[in-house]
Image (cartoon, rainbow, N blue to C red):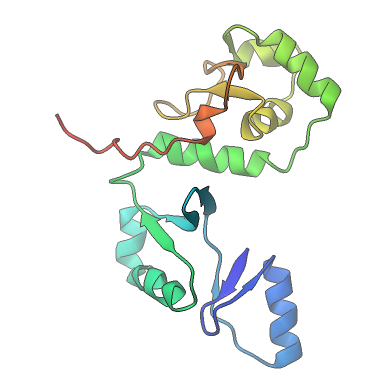
Length: 177
């Protein structure tokens, strides 16, 4: 989804916004949030930015109040709240969402990862990264996305109950003891 911050209009894609701008002669202020979370209390938009990027372009700090005028909730999370490994893993899984595995691929991959198996071992068995990451992104498989970046050593297994790796934000990452 993409917003025109000047009008509060929400568009499914940037192309839809550009088409509307061409047709209407408008000059939109384009903004695309990183994620939309569906909570029990409603949806919330999430922007993840490194603190240094916020310092270079502090106008992003005004986006929550701008979107609030149009009825949207936006939260900005920076690296003091979300650590680098988690953010990079979530970006990788977000991009992997474009690969839509078929039922046969999912079944075969789940059978080979019933117990913990490394991404490297799955690669050695002929599974492409796009399939494995696509299954992680869609919740068919799970791994620890919080501690380290996904790599050949990452242990992966079939989801037993719920894909908790997709449901928890590490908001305690900056807590000190």
